[in-house]
Figure 1 (spheres, helix red, strand yellow):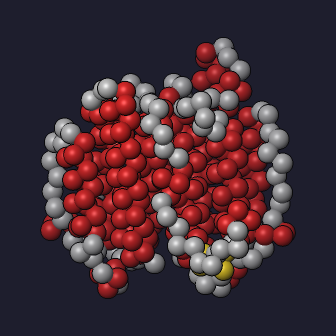
Figure 2 (cartoon, rainbow over the protein chains, first blue to last red):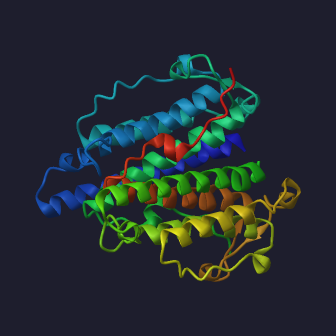
Length: 170
Length: 170
């Protein structure tokens, strides 16, 4: 289920986030403000702003699959230098395109892969722990926070925008 | 992985939420306000308040496992009539205790189980779709939103409180 949880579902969630951000453009136009005002919005003075929330959501998804499949060295680098909504949308597009380069077979050893990060100072998690307790709560946290910042600023978004379409069967 | 994702991880996340809520008690005392002021806080006038966010997080976790294991009829009912933080904390405790009644074997047929809800008007999802595209994004959404409401109101919580302890190995 690693592939479905990381590649398929995180791609869906990032595309939902992209559609939510697109709504902020129409909102900014109606308020006669630059949409970049919203990109700098935050819910507390010491919280990352909307721009940074989106960047981290993208990186959590990107580095999640890169680490689970032991391909960190070949993962695309992002300088976090976006300044416009168009650039931020491109960051999402690039991340989804990167996720699409993976197949189910790439995750054959993911569950038991030893995962580490520089800030963990040599400690590690097994891949399944990393997936369930790190990647997924982080991706959802930053997408939900981006949503909350826009919601708080008056952009008309609802939970359906966040969840996206469901594959209902009749 | 159904058991780990729904029982184990959602229990962890609800316990993290409980610890976050506990921090709001100390915050309210320092501000000389009733903690229930925070339970009524929201980020937008037409958003559910903190109390409701916690109730829905609990129900998403509870009904998620109940539906995946075809045990909805025997799931505990909650009237959503909490008015105090202590009652809300008890709701979380009860939900975690309910999740603990399940074992891995209960999820043997979960992936292909047909899942429906009254509001879906007869349509259904397969269990794996329901798990990945419905339960998990919903649980994380409502816990992240509860966190965001407290963060916006000045309660000193950080992402470590949200993620909880990691099972790092040396």
